[in-house]
Length: 214
Image: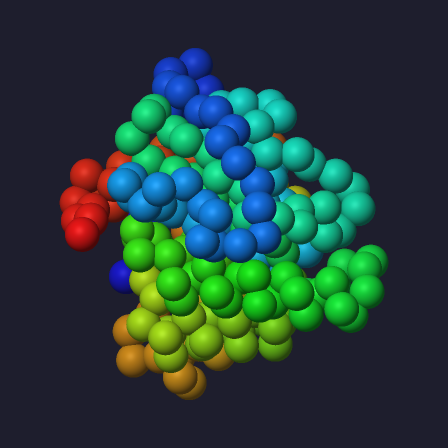
């Protein structure tokens, strides 16, 4: 399954009208009450996760951006349109912090993903400029092994030609096909140009509309 690519930018009429920060913590048991659908975003440090979240919500500073990798160190909940939660998870991989902290982030992320009952899907962000990275493949496979719904969002699509971005996605697909019978949904995006904003927003809206909570 692959998203249809859309180049239209709709900043003047955002699909998500309201976005507000709710809470940050290190323990999934202290997250907001699981009475709303939840969608999580995660990726390697410096993949452009905060910028993508700001682009999707049409807010410049909803998620804090930084030139320093590893800025996000907590589970951050944002309530969107009073109907669902967008969750900004700590990045995995390189970050200028101690091994102890990185290990703690790993436990925090795993506990959240495996135990958060209202989690609908995990969007895994991948830098479209790079060849397939082992750490991304391993994390995606881990999600698959644990039957966690996911989609792949390739970021920074404006940093090279669309053809180059598509070539790198094709390389990624080829690697994943070694372990996946059916590939997760895939989208190419750019926080700078708005590439992929509409189709990703519509996909999220569809997930929220069809969400079933216990």
